Image (cartoon, rainbow, N blue to C red; front, side, top):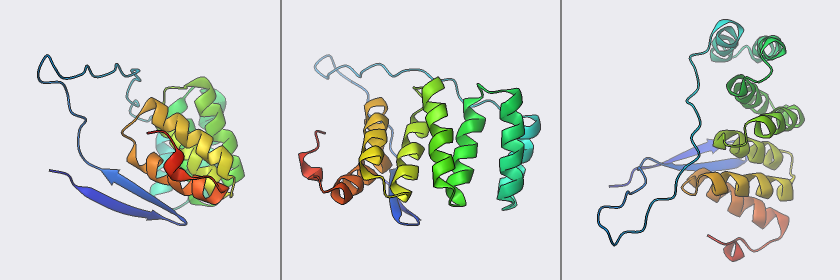
Length: 168
């Protein structure tokens, strides 16, 4: 049973499916490839938590300042950097989001959502080749990431490439 949900995010349409990946049930089934383990995000504390509260109140400028303060103290906090990038995308600061999310993918390459959001930020700037590259990186890390697959097809179309020629 598959449940599908459409989410409109400005000019970018995201498609998400709520279905776990199948696991082998017999010896004839192919093995499931190992996934790179990434620790789940910790419960936000201090400035990170305050910033998320500001996001919930639509006080994005305050949230961005709190994220920046938190990241000065904890520069390796990929989850705060990811939340900062989301916030920057939300208010249309796409160039800043690209830089923030590049830093996140540079220090924590296995965080799939950082690659995906980097692709979205590039799309919102009309940087179709860069978007396609980030979305391919997302799919390389999570082959079942349907939003990345959908947006990759859109980016390739805008870049003048044939999305049907893209390997699955």
